[in-house]
Image (cartoon, rainbow, N blue to C red; front, side, top):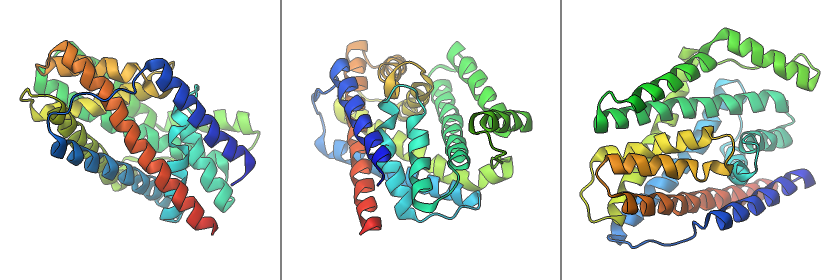
Length: 294
């Protein structure tokens, strides 16, 4: 691993520690059902593995067949990059790892990585809209989420948006670089893995909530995670969506009938829960990297 990439990994770990310390999220809440909590972690870890497969599949669809081990290393080692201010380092990180290993154009891989992130957000908003509709019907938040989803639909599938992105990268890198575009047909071919990812995390979040409360909660509570996580990704100021995700989650859980105080505890605990998943994929990525360089 080159020095600059090692520096990126260590820097992301440092910013993670600082962000969590400042947010004071490292608190273990009361657990009502340990077996259900364990199930939530199984869904969580499976979701992270699916994220790796999604990354591999979108690279394959872009005519860049990369070994699953390298995809795992790239995703795992860059997972904490989202805690570095700037919101682009996790997207750039996994692309940079593949570039280093295969001598492929960084600009092209970064664009593909961005496409993957946009698909993730696009689908997350759909899951979130379904959850909001089930809980509250056609409320204001459903319409606002629908507007966001429509914007991302234009960004992902519009030829004009694609051409402007190519023009911007051409200016930045001073090269005539062609960016693989995503059509609706090509997106549908890789979408099942992205959908499965959100389903697994939604089921994981639902079982997490069940394990941390004595209140009966509807299944739609699980769909609050895609909504909160997606809006957390879109938060331009907070590192890793810390604060933004939890705020959305508290509002969503309270709409599901969970008292504000308990909803706040669960939202904060979900950060620790998801961090465990990030640590899992980071360790898996580190092992995969060591195996590939052995």
